[in-house]
Image: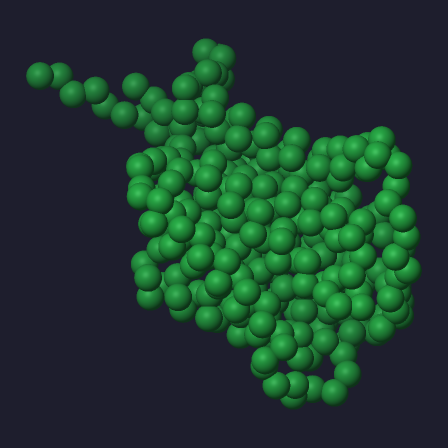
Length: 287
């Protein structure tokens, strides 16, 4: 027999109190991560120095807790696996990153600013991924992969509402931002499961935020005016467009993983997969 290296999914039943405790744990950790941006003292004047330090602290704390609790997501703290499924994940992640990088209006920066900008983006990816795909995914992993993907993606998306607090509140912009981050989070979870490595999505996350540093942004302190909601049909169309690519890419990966577990491969492809060591050959025991 042969089988593709796949992902085991564990499912079980839990009491309502346990589910409530896990939800409270995930939400509480997400809120604590956001509060760190307001509670950690500022050490740098100007630039992104303080934000870089805050993301580094967020990543360190998340990693420490994941290790201390021996969470199931520790299995993703490894180099990416080379397989058919991971190849699909890499290709789709590359396409997504390409669209994010080459569709923005670039800004001119010095070499030092570019280096610091890259470090900043990596720390954003590291901090946010260890919180969302590391800790929160790990809390809900015992309920099954679909639940872990959905809940971790939803919490990750809602965390971005902090950008619209107070005078920055803009309901339509907040709605579209949450949609975008939810779609990205589902896709990121799919890539992590496909490559079996959280480092893949840390890098993908960093590149997807390319415009934060390397594109022309609104001046600091600029508050966009609150405008009336678009007509309902325009909201529906925009919602579809925002979710189209990340969710479609995620479903391609999940579909490929589902097919691989059922060994739906053309017969002519099997010898090649075995030759390239992309599948494992199992010996059948004879009693």
